[in-house]
Image 1 (cartoon, rainbow, N blue to C red):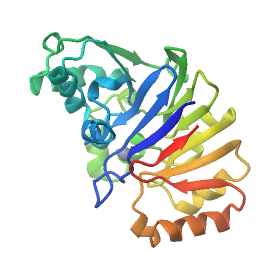
Image 2 (cartoon, rainbow, N blue to C red):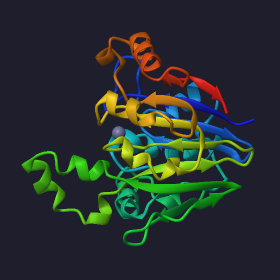
Image 3 (cartoon, rainbow, N blue to C red):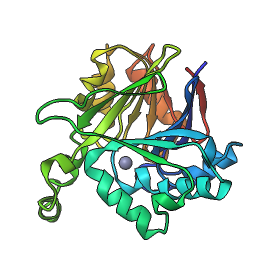
Image 4 (cartoon, helix red, strand yellow):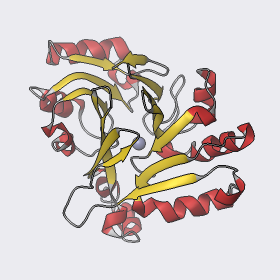
Length: 271
Ligand SMILES: [Zn+2]
């Protein structure tokens, strides 16, 4: 049976007891990391595994709170003497700068002792990205408007954003169809609940959604009558809502009968 363990649930900055964005899927096909916010390699170790026990990595977008722990994961494999290749699935626009970053931290790929297999996706203009498959897991990336929102939020942001091509300003939601049945949707970072319309056209057993970049009420209202069995809220600071219990009470009052929980570090969920 597959399971999901939250490694980091912080809203863009580590907080007491909260680490940057990362989640671990344990599947019959192997252990998969969804985003690698720091300190993912430490948390994997703290849970009793090694960096080398991570069989594949999927990245929603390159904000540092989502990929800041990737070099240490790769370095962990190097120190541990990893031999198995490590497939990394990611938006094509971040591939070249990411490889340059690994060179900068003295982790050139021909030095690691194991192969990093890059699997970049890139949607055709106006289209969604094609599903990618690994070991029987089918993953569908869908672009979100998160980065467009970030780089349109002020004149300073717009000026900085003009340095990027439009295709570089795409974050992604990732929908995992696991080999033993569950369909798990990770929102990645989004700008509005409607960013999830395409991934949730197909019913999902679990939705892991960020809860940071839009009013809470907007997401709770939008989730009404969506084909989702269980929802986990992540990428949020519980104290802003009066604490986890207060937020869960608000959520359950708004959406009675929907199974929604606030994700916490090392929370493990059977899928
Ligand atoms: Zn983020």
